[in-house]
Amino acid sequence: MTAGFSSEFLWGVAFAANQAEGAYDADGKGLSQADVVPFARPGDYVELHTLMSPTPERIARAAATSDTAEYPKRRGSHFYDRWEEDVELFAELGVRALRMSIAWTRIFPNGDDDEPNEAGLAFYERLFRRLQERGITPVVTLSHYEMPLHLVTAYGGWVDRRVIGLFERYAETVMRRYRGLVTYWLTFNEINTTVIEPYTGGGVVDDGSPDRTQRAYQALHHQFVASALVTARAREIDPAFRVGCMLARMLHYPATSDPADVQQAQHDNDMNLLHTDVQVRGAYPGIVRRYWRENGIEVAMAADDERILAENTVDFLSFSYYMTLVSAVEPEKYGATGGNLFSTVKNPHLETSEWGWHLDPIGLRIALTDLWTRYQVPLFIVENGLGATDRVEPDGTIADEYRIDYLRRHLLQVREAVADGVELLGYTAWGGIDIVSASTSQMEKRYGVIHVDLDDQGAGTADRTRKQSFFWYRDLIASDGATLDR
Ligand code: BG6
Image (tube, rainbow, N blue to C red; front, side):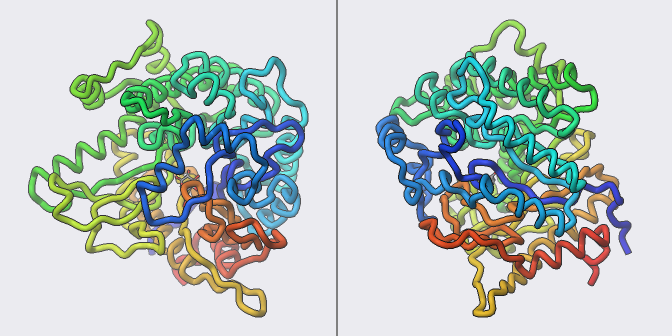
């Protein structure tokens, strides 16, 4: 039998404030960029990208309404109101870690306010204290697709260098306040989203101008600098803090063994890993500089930026993993399938989820081994899970064997990577509890091991029910992974 997981391994669940909390205007919270993104039916990626990337006019219209049916992230799955019950459920599940995010807009409602909002600070303090009492380690993302909307509309999002200072002030405020309660911090969720979906990742609005890629890379650069400065600040505030970056790992396979396809896959992998090259190694790789040169992209950097990046690399590398992609020099020769924020060439060797995402447990082992070989820093899987439609039986039970199967097959591969020597801090399954989908804003695309009685329109009691996967995951954690073999 393969060696198992250590008793220190951080088994957990993960979600983001903008998808779980709801209560979008409670206790002084400001509107965030996520609060103006409308519900979208899946399937059409052009349509999805349009909806996820609102124009200034659509933002203004959305900001003026209080409609939570059209803008589901405003209501989430009611975590803000039911957090005590949810923490008890997490404790019963036996998790050692809860990966979550702080809504920047609860702390600085507009992003550039003079003073922080005490009600927001107090909310997270209560939550962190309760987690501490229950022996659950918080892993806190500072920015998970939820920057203050005011910074989007008045500053142009992360394209504006002043946002670096505003983010630093927000990060410093929460790191000082929660010292002793929080140890693990992630600066930006899936930082590579800023170049894939610039509104979601960087608050870069689609104003119709042709230079959006240029603006996206500028925004990304500012986020890299902000992340490095916050990492430096964290070390001053508390040397015990551990700061990580967070990447949506998009592992690309070549469509064939034709060296041209293999080289294309290598290129696509390197463009994904440019983010961790900057945040873990401390410098931009040549491949992105060449991309900028050949595409007329000029990223403005201040004199000290490259030194700041080099001197303040992260302590660990966290990542999300849902699927793998396929690279081909002639992609039109193959069929396409869906993915998180993008579509890809279909892999004939893999099945897909209801949403068309490739299901690839072995890819997770490859991703882990690759990242470890390249960077030699501790890794942390902070998102992995299956979005599926669940059926509630007449007796109220939810038999989600498909989710158990997904988690089991992925974790078996994780165990192989750990046995190969990969240093892995933990695994937090997405989303633990059902939440609003990041891409489509659906509620019926469920990731939780805990069901929430809300539908796509937000109708329902919001009552929580343990799914079959809840009991499976509870036993798995209690056994340090030994029940994977059953
Ligand atoms: C990740 C995000 O990209 O994927 C999460 O960090 C998101 O916020 C998750 O929920 C799953 O994507 P979706 O669109 O199915 O919710």
